[in-house]
Image (cartoon, rainbow, N blue to C red):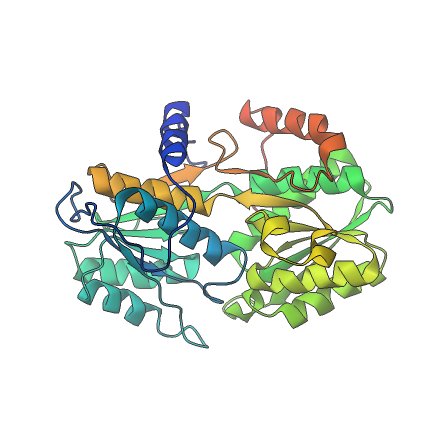
Length: 355
């Protein structure tokens, strides 16, 4: 069943909260402003727990975007953050959440669908703590103190596919997924649909770095480079990645091959910090995890969190989009805007699963 979109009013509220927030704070936060308990409302200093996905902080993508949202919230409200990363095989996710709860952090945000089962279990053990999980539904979990922060990745990926199909010079493009799992299938499905909407005969290479259950594919730039290089060598001139930290390898392959690439989650033109790689990143599919995290913390502080529910960020709410940094897609912006509006208006139904 297709989940309801955020209302325009909700989008405006989100935009308003962002306008009030600054963009930087050191890791431990600061200030003596208010925090809240699990029911919301100002009671004591805000202590945010942020449990990272595989790769941890510094991935220049998904995890870093989540941290940026916490930074902005702490800049506005004061407080501090504790942000642990999972161990090498990510077997200690439940322990990370439990540790944060035991140390008095509230709210606690689990970054990534891999926390899905663990966060439900831990939330049940700590009913007085408010939890959120990114990329996993809370609506059917039966936990009244858990909120799901979800995204219409397929919609943003559709626009990435449109951009690739309009800019390719070989009518041959590629997609690199980090892990062969349902969530990343949404990126692939949208990308393929968008490219084929422009050119039904376009060639699209698709490959995943690691199989389902092996999350190393989100933090292996060397393998990301190998997979992408194979696509460039086969004739693709643009490759889109949904591979977290492994995306750095995709950019390196693009630079080595004279091709171009599409980033994901963050505006990766601004996060790679390497002019040679910036030159090949023609756009990024923006998944505004930072906005979602900040908005959730804002709601916690003002006491309006609704547990046991999901919030879906999509094109209509500007929770998803394409970056324009570098000016590489300025010449096709009109086409992209047209497809975006057709999706918002319901004229185009973007698939979420791959064939």
